Image 1 (cartoon, chains in turn yellow, cyan):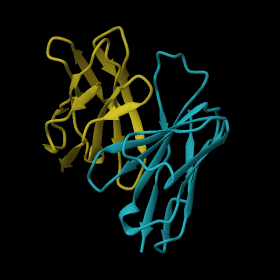
Image 2 (cartoon, chains in turn blue, cyan):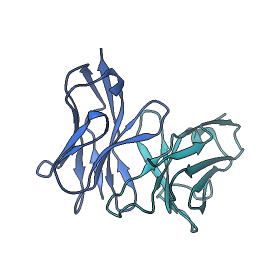
Image 3 (tube, helix red, strand yellow):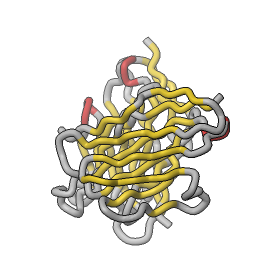
Image 4 (cartoon, chains in turn brown, purple):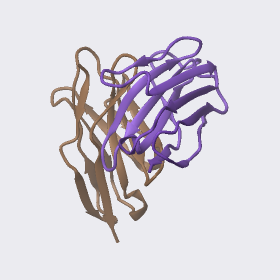
Length: 111
Length: 119
């Protein structure tokens, strides 16, 4: 089964510092990986995806993620965090017909 | 960009009644729509896959007779929670795939969600 794991329930970072939200995957075949962000009582907003090509993927709002096949990871990163980045972040993998989501990581950026 | 809407955004109903939630793709046609359920501070759980013009495919453990899904057109899918009970209270989110997307894109566009509270 295609699955992702987000090992951290919460990540705290000070504004202006770099942030990393971790995701590891377990798939058979080529992984199609996604990051989404969810603000309170809202749906999911797409940040970025890895399908093929360059391992470093750049997405919306200054986020990027690096696909690492040897470590089976797809960590989300941003060089300088903003308070407005505080939200719930989901990593997802395409299962063949739908998306399977990780449990989510709550990111809190403090001023 | 592709926009998906849901209506209503919030609904409160009494136990035993039925509630219908609409999911619309506003600027694209969606041959496939998905319905997810999310409990507080938890991940999204796929409930069913809805294909236009055919029966929905439900995930294991999801009651077909309780969560009725209709995908009558390329822009509309509905989820009806029948005989709702307090344990059905949740955040329901739909998503859609644009039929023009390259098959490898695998991208889904999400609606804003519907908060259902059953009293």
